[in-house]
Image 1 (tube, rainbow, N blue to C red):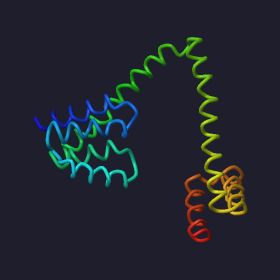
Image 2 (spheres, rainbow, N blue to C red; image 1 turned 120 degrees about the vertical axis):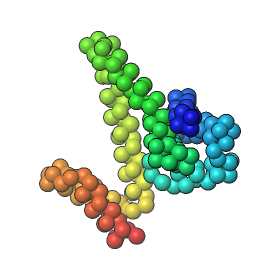
Image 3 (cartoon, rainbow, N blue to C red; image 1 turned 180 degrees about the vertical axis):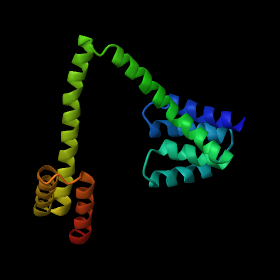
Length: 176
């Protein structure tokens, strides 16, 4: 019975919490604090604070913690499955619909309109990163890192992860 309760608590919270973790947190609180009484309000707020301090999606961290606390490893698995199931189901359904109509002129137009929007969003993000690094690190440090990263990745074909680690090391040594 506990596994079904864990599944329903997190499935309902995440299927109704459109918008990701921040939208589903109040729904999860309603289920785990008010409905099932697995945590107190204070315990929930502490778990939320710790979960926010860790990297990754907040809803999955909360589900894993509560599931493990209530029913061990299998409980954590059931809670995590219930948390990601709504996204997986929606993704499969939407991809089936898109695949079915992939040759439709309207779908092709839609994807043609989406590509420039994504490019603009990535450009704005890159500009924001550049502006932030320019203010924090100075123009010469920023230009050095941009040119060095470009040469390493585009000319010498160094893996981006290695470039990122190198930039972190450079920042720790010269910009700290």
